[in-house]
Amino acid sequence: MPAADSKPTSESKAAQNGADSSAEKPVATTSFLHIGQAPAEIAYPEKDAVRKILHSAREVYLKSQFQAALDLVTQALEIDQQSPSALAMQRELVEAMKRINRHDS
Image (spheres, helix red, strand yellow):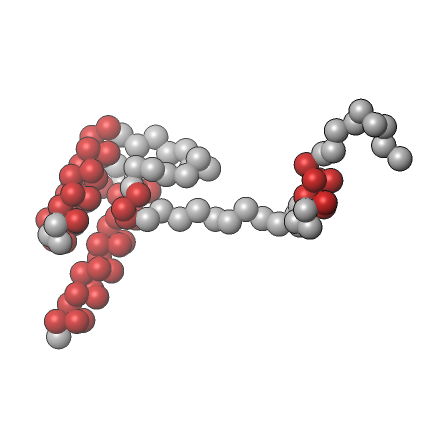
């Protein structure tokens, strides 16, 4: 029997709440509209120039100017080919443009 002054551990709290303490955390994904707001688990130091270009690309995207947004993302990738934010935005733009082209056909 635990002492009256002992504090429950996070494991015992989880067990009391019926939670599985071995459950994995959900994997965070990057969404186009949240570029620049990467989850805390991702610690990639985005360059200021890349962040500024991606911000402009997001604004252009929201105006449905997909090719112009993709051109800006390409500029960002010329500065930093490994930028997770730029790569994610590029993937989403390409997919959006594919969907639009399929719809127009």
